Image (cartoon, rainbow, N blue to C red; front, top):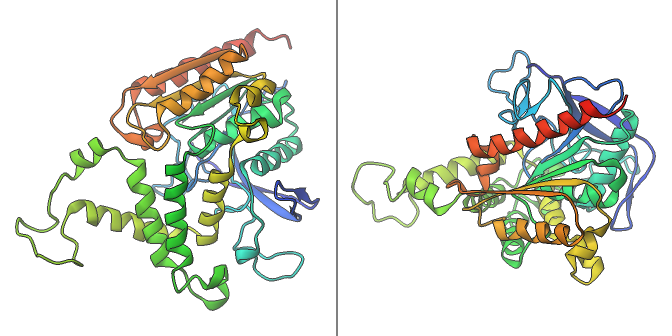
Length: 377
């Protein structure tokens, strides 16, 4: 399935949760499948930290360009594009096509850099809603996401409850716990203390805070994998031979080599200011905050039906956090399905080919498809 990126420009100001606003911005997006005549089969996919609007399919003439959730979305796949019109939107502030810190501020003509306004999950949802308005989609058959994308899916049911029939929230949480916020802060400090960061205006200096980005990615990657997977993949294997070098600076173990490779690769394509923005948006998300910490009260406005999925070895977004959402929805007598998959892969499991997980999602979307078929034209 070959796909083509698209973009849409918005001239009117978008009011942000911080009290600031942004105008004359662009959102990058892709679509898969065909919108039916009733415009009732649209599914919005929300992306996580380092992903983008390129959800599925490949770019013609570009080998190894599959979308980040290509195992989930496409013809005959769990989210079947023979039945659904799927939309992926790159979040505002990202570095993959939507307006972000690397772009020029229309007010000044200078690159935003560190002056790009702070954005939240709620801001992303509101921007997505404007793009759907422009596409003529008033109501979504489903909104779906994993991790930070799952937070956006949950937020959709609160900010635009009348526009969402189903919400699929995978490997996510109603807010970050202190440990998660701590990991994000350590990663951010690695970036902002890099001498090449220049207060976020490194573009003007022709530099990239690569060292900070590498460390941030290494920290993040550790949290995405389970202890079992790390031990199975790497254990205590040495990188070279069987003898120790007795060095405090050389790479000795295979896991060190792997993390450095992931960090090097990440620093070549991801923007440092974007990393700061997105991790802060993760920190800020907490719909219960306006309700004295009562999640059930926060979710009372939601009218969608829900599927939540968690993974047993995901310690970054543990099953207990998904169960918090399930309990709050049940207190409001909402229609909720929940699957807890006993999988060894940690947080990254939501991206992988676990047949039980994929079959749960497939069955749920088949149910949605049957509902659409029965709906009067």
